[in-house]
Amino acid sequence: MLTFNLTVPLSVDFSRPEDYLIFIFHILFATGSALLAGSVVIGIMSTKALRSQNRFIFMLNTSISDTLTGCSVFYLGLFDVQEGYPSRNGTYYILPSFLGVNVLTFVFAQFDRYLAVCHPFFYKRHITRGVVIGVCALCWIYTYSILTVQSVVPVAFAAQMNAFGVIVLQVIVAIKVLMTIKLYMIARHQLSREPPSSDKENKKESLRIIVFVVICFLILWAPSFVNISVKYVTKNGVRFKNEATNLFAIMARFNALSTPALYIWGSPALRAAVWNSVWSKIFKRRTTRPTSVSTVVRKSM
Image 1 (cartoon, rainbow, N blue to C red):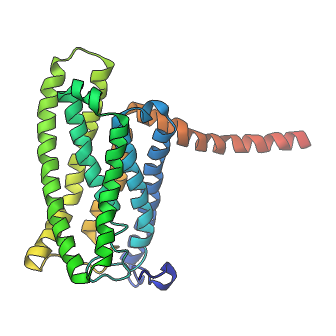
Image 2 (cartoon, rainbow, N blue to C red):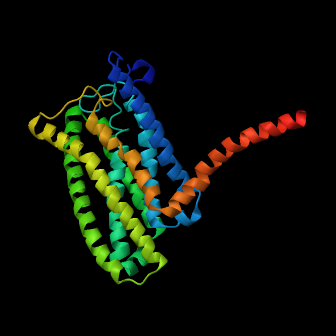
Image 3 (cartoon, rainbow, N blue to C red):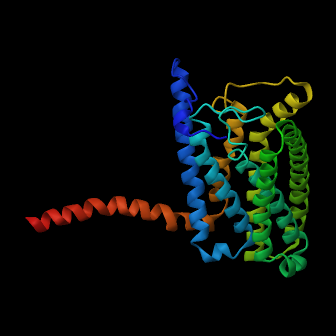
């Protein structure tokens, strides 16, 4: 049974200077990733031209997951939580699994780009917006269906399911690596043969984003993958006090900040949508508020 946050001790006891740094880091990281990924969600949702493109639907799905991951750090990073079997103040992997949704979404996004570049006629005919939305929904349904089963079966069997899930995750990561290499090589050759057009530029832009996101994903996730594999195979590996001090988990969660940042960096259309839909309105309010106050003062005089 899950306990309320008020009964869960904090992740650090503030007996050392670094405890303050850890606590402040998680507050800043949770706030920053939730705001950045959330602004991407709002930017895509409020822009019809982006919602109509399949690649932005995948970006939307991962950004929703990243937003929730950022919010989850307010619990995983600030309180004494240890996910696993057995767990301590855990969430039955509900919060960490937001990252799992991202992993599946990235794989399907890579297949989407592969079909768009290498089989454009098949892609335009069969890979509709409804299909992409259904695939994104499937990522959530699959991930949390597995967690639902794990939460109702005996702990020993749940631990076995979790170990099997780790193996499946390793296979998915291997597929991601191979797909990235193959997609880059094929797309580079294919796009060099196409005449200049807006469609060609869109393909190049989406491929560039996927390649950079996957590379960043692998760099940040690799230590955690290796450590988890070592722990399951040899019962050794590096162990941490809780999720807040788990350096490998922190690196993996950093994808929630790096992924939306790469989206905004790699897509001028998304960058403009995020600015127009979110940040320009925030800064406009901040700049107009003093003006309105001064106007009231002048009128009163």
